[in-house]
Length: 212
Image 1 (spheres, one colour):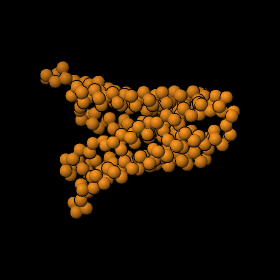
Image 2 (cartoon, helix red, strand yellow):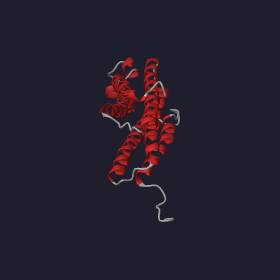
Image 3 (tube, one colour):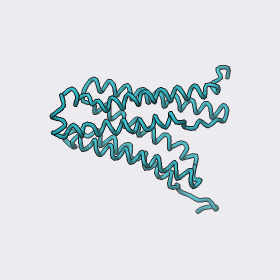
Image 4 (cartoon, helix red, strand yellow):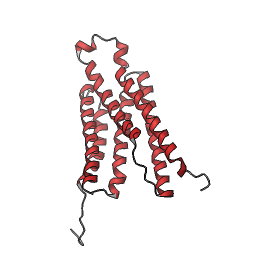
């Protein structure tokens, strides 16, 4: 302790930093060639790491609010850590896609998520600097986040299900190459990503004054 002030990071900020550190580990493991690590094993490891990161995201926010540990560092790095993890995971999904159709679809999801996050982040910045408004996450934004987590988890888990002989051998090759659960959750992710983004713009349009 120096000059009566506490030094060092509090627990929520440590969890945020831990989540950021998970991102490069996650990406490296998920991009290892099959000759080094079986894709099924790396996929299961990846989803476990992704879910662990999602849990730390939930914990650091609750702890910070409950014990009054909200800091400027946390306000900046917590949402950045979330975006790093989601965009990193989606990039890996595109890289690991095993068919042209799935690669195109996953690329669409990745681009929509990136554009939405850039747009909403810019909107929040304008609203904060011009009017001091704080744009809190609404229900659509929370559903969007949950759908992204579900989609990413399903993409990594579904191939492991088809690796089970009793299931994989009973399904046609096109089904295995184009996993329907991944497409379904990906489609819902696209809907809520766009919907929540449009909703933010409608609610905060009053702060976008073209005369200023």
